[in-house]
Length: 140
Ligand code: HEM
Image 1: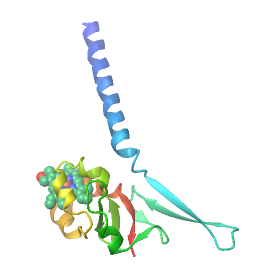
Image 2: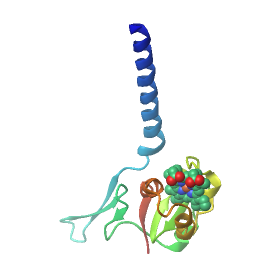
Image 3: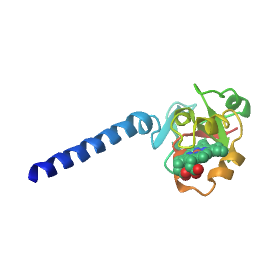
């Protein structure tokens, strides 16, 4: 009886470790919760810091900006950017991970995907949380 329990708990432990490793290699590693860009000020004495917070889906003034044309250049499975509510997201990672299929994400690449995203997932906490992890800046 004891042996069976040990085997069961070992299997559960291994599954949890595998899930953690999968999540880390496929997702967390590529989408840090916060990233900071540092720009030396013109005088060279201080450093200006701007932050993209991919946990709270927020940017500070001065964080990376993209033109609509720059976003429009990323339309493929190799590099997919989209605009949602004036913010720019790099969805490349998400194309093959999306539970609703890759076509839904590919249909947003290079364009303003706000309407499509809202229509399907506007009120979904999970989808909005996933989206936030891919924030890279705002539209110029
Ligand atoms: C950046 C864009 C998107 C993100 C981050 C995203 C995220 C997610 C997530 C986290 C799920 C699983 C949980 C849930 O259902 O809420 C999901 C499921 C799904 N998504 Fe998306 N999604 C995006 C765009 C779209 C678009 C544009 C469509 C279709 C027009 C779509 C169609 C679906 C479908 C069909 C499912 C399967 C579950 C269901 O029917 O609700 N998604 N998506």
